[in-house]
Length: 415
Image (cartoon, rainbow, N blue to C red; front, side, top):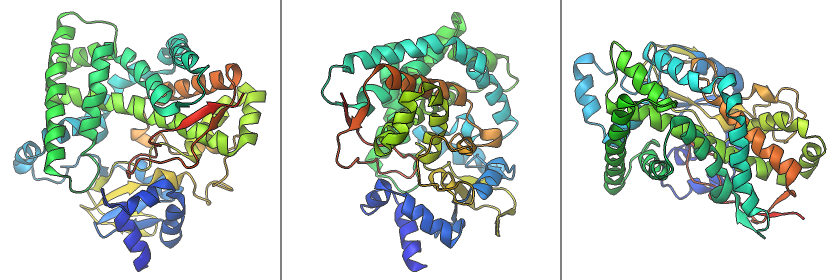
């Protein structure tokens, strides 16, 4: 028990050098945690869910608030909000951190840009973007799949949907990465907080101008839709809050997809028989995508939520005021839900039951777009390019509790 508790504390401590070992291969740790208790209370009063049934219940349970100030008395709420770093305020303005009815209103608006019909209209553009990125790499001996392809495809697609120029896109990536640096739980150096706030202010200044331009002259893009709907609302958001929606759309639309692409290449490299199946029958690509999302999803855990009442989950009752998260990497390998969960098998009949996109009211609004990007990329790679081989002896993963993401991924064409 004490050894596991120490391991949990390491896992939840940003900057602890011992956590890098867990980040390299977190699945044995997840298994130990689930075997001890699938709903585990840490020393930080953060509950960690590692089982599919309990995680599904948690994702749909209305008594968990996404608002970090949900239990702050109304009289103190404004002061508590203003005391947060600017980068945190902007980030927490996103709909992911709002409760109904505000969450439902924002979700309905954003969903318009990501319906299956709208995604189908973008299919040709997605495919052309993927081709344009892959063709220059065809003759390369080796290249970094992450920085030279994976991050660019979803970034270019989501920014086109949002209506952002190439120069704004490049700056926006820097701004959002700077703000995300301080969102992981734990203490952060003052210098990192200042840098995050500086980038948040630059982002806010730039988007104030973009919003003003869209108000004067709307265009056919998501930012224009957000601005118009906000103006017609009884309680319109501030520009700071509007930026929060844009950040959420951008990070949700590029980071998660980019790292699923990379994790998929790694999975196919480790299970070459599965890669051969897809190359012999490209109609299996959609099934392969669902198995990649289950086997090694890019999201390691959901953002924590706060119990606004005593809530039963599994064999426990979560007390009001305590926080809960689900570890997606563990949930998607729960042996009670999936047979041989540690095996990558694209013919698995229930791979689509994964929770990589969440569940219930918080199911990812951009799931259709993400699947379209992933299917397009792997279909092209499987039909028009030689197989990819991972060159790195050991893939180094980013040390974070929120993402399952390789720092880089050196690959070569297996000609």
